[in-house]
Image (cartoon, rainbow, N blue to C red):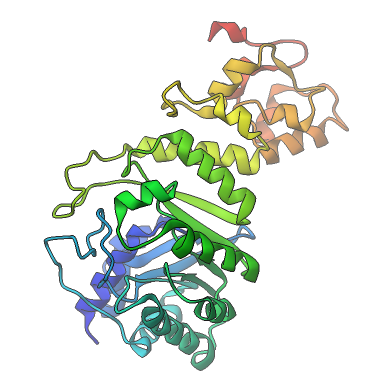
Length: 376
């Protein structure tokens, strides 16, 4: 087995963020297993829809690509061509099953560059997951990356084997994606495939990734796209990848997007998906230039609109959710606690999960508030 190939394609998987992943600390540890050592760059912890955490192996099928994306190291427009590798389906299936049997890997995330065309590459990916499912009888999590421009029949076949599916929208509009590439079309190659995935209802839904800051888009544009995606594509999650220029690509001289920008977009995304904020409320957080400030958006909203402290003894769950430091689970616990203890104490709020140093300026406990909101 070509361990150099395994290493390169495992490391290359880190650029695709369309799953909720955190790096395993174990990857820094020494291992005598040559395959595990070669794949440490592709081992992550991922959170799936039911709240379960699984250890997954992320990899590309190939790092060769016929597309010309201006920010990508695998692009035909990258003047420094790195070594190119491509798995045979049985190779990748064997690598994954080795990791699964010997190192507790519970899931596979398979993505790819595009060689020849999207259908040809997808066939290789499909052969791999078929082997994993049918020959090796793997019953666990598989995230299948749908490639732009792939045919409907290939997407439908992928649905038979995938737990979750995704295709990266990359940009906020057709105009913006035209700055990235001359090959992919926004509506036809990407949004149409998203609609197909939606209609096929994968068990864990679909996700997508947007590159933030490469095309000069504002946060207002990103959030408009976020709302459209959640409202129209039954999206499980959108992921925000801060642009980082890569040497020898056409975008190498463009400024990197600060990591905090993606972090604030995730904050707002959470408010929309989990806290029930209306989109018009979210727009009020933006600066005049259409950008989010580098401050917690929930706190900004609270300072702007909570003119009086929220009384935790009588507030509705929806009102509690507007308080910084109180999330959905905590709000529900507070509502439940009040049934037996009408006059809650600070200790009980803390035990329920409230982050009091954030909540204090915005709440009233037993008729007492720490300080006035206008002091902020």
